Every structure is written in structure tokens, then in C-alpha cells.
Image 1: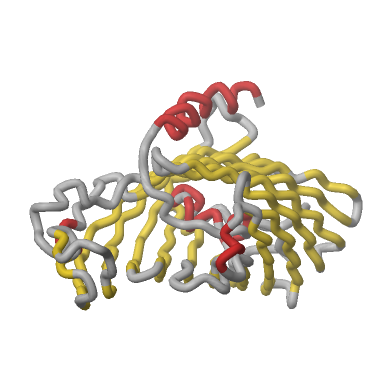
Image 2: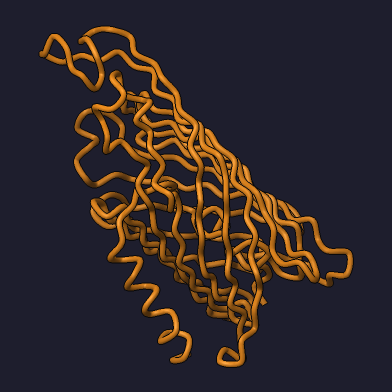
Length: 321
């Protein structure tokens, strides 16, 4: 364990000192690590094909509040590695981001980590960013957005390049990963009214650090997890605790520092199908202007490898035992 921590510590420090933009924010990140880290592609137990759908309505009663939908799938292919893809639509006020990303991860069992696998992943994709708004401000004209009260719409396509490292222990009890998105920092100057004025209009880099450990307790299991996000200007840190009973029901609680407390419920609908719901109670004062609670739904489905003996699923890495 000490070797693992000393190996990943420099990467952790790099993540915390880098700059970027928070690309994805959701509460039940535990069930969709691949969306945050391309190196997590193919880490489902026994090479299962893992499919998922994530929908989030944030700050439900606030006008222009964020809405997020992500559909993803990943698996492991012998002699090739982990492969995956996901599509995303993220709405934040007048800005809508739609895109697709393809990922590959190389699964490596180095001699200095005899009890685990070090996955190294990359992803590439295309994002379409659109802006459709009516600007209201006191000035008659602004070179960035144009005239006050006028309709303004624009769109621009940009590339996405991401990379990550994801460590998994052989018994699937422990995982730790670090990743970055939008590493090219593509320009979105085309979204401004007068191109060339907003020369710093870019999609900044975003970085994520996530991990978890599972304790088996007879017929149940307890799993603490965490996720740190940063864009250099904003930092977010989530801690969560999941309790799973008899591989049928999962109860969870989460805290996003300075922002919210959350409750979660997951149900195993069948051997391969799980559905989860979370409710976030906001504590940062935003609710003064409306209902700032958030709702999130996750649906996962696994298609077992034909050579797999797996009979149950739990968490991002596969079975609970």
C-alpha cells in the first residue's frame, strides 16, 4: 500500500496545483468513474460490457439551472485493453455543451505493484458549444456580447483531449485515479459578439482525483469514496459513504464541502441492472431565490462476458466479493 501511495502522490500534487474547468459534476460519481477518467475504461469485473445513463437536474427551482445527461459504455477486450465512449449534454443557463468522447486504456501489472493493475488511459472527442441568450445590462453596447436587450446566438466546435491513470486492487476493494480533461484548452472566441476581443475565451483544463475502499461485512459492505475537482479557480471536494445490503439495496450519504448534503438509494433490479437516485440539499444560501435542491438518476446495465462467472454487481469495479 505504501508503494501505491508514493507512486501516485506526485500525480496528486500535480492535480491539486493545476488549473482547469469543472467539466462534469454529479453526486453518484461512484457508479460512473469512466466519465471522469478514461483509464477506468474496461475495469468492470470479468470484462463485462458496462452501460450507463446519468441524468441530473441541479438547483431545480432556479432559472437557468444546470442540467446534465450522460450516456456511456465501456468494456475490456483481450489483447487490446479497455475501450469506451460517452456522449454528454450539459446545459448551464444560455450555454449548451454537446459532445462525444472515445477512450482507450492500457491495463498494466507492473512488478512494483504486485497486487493490482495500473491503467493508463487517453480520450479524444468533439464538443459543440452553443450560446443563445438575450443580454440585459446598463451599457448601450458591449464589445463582447453586443447590444443590451438584443438576441445573440453563436456556436463553436472544439476538440477534447483527456488522459488519466487509474489503479485497481486485484480483489476490487480499492481504487484510486487521477485525470484531466480539455488539456488542449481550445478557444471559444467564436462565442463572443466581436471575435478577437475575448482573446482569453477558452475551455480551461479540468482535473479530477477520485478513490474508494470497500469493507466487506458479511452479508453487507461499506464503501467510503471521495472525488476532488478543480478548474484552478474553483475547487470542489465530495466525500461519500455507501452501505450495501445483500447485494440488493444500497444506501448512501454524501457531502460536497460548502455546497450540499445528499442522500442516495440504489436498487438492484436484476443481476445486471441497477438504478440509483440521489437528492441534494443545498447549504450555500442559493435557495433564498428558489428551490436549490438537486435530483439525480443513474441507471446501469451490464452485459456479462460469455466466459464470466459473475452473478452480482456493486459499485464501479464489479462485484462486492
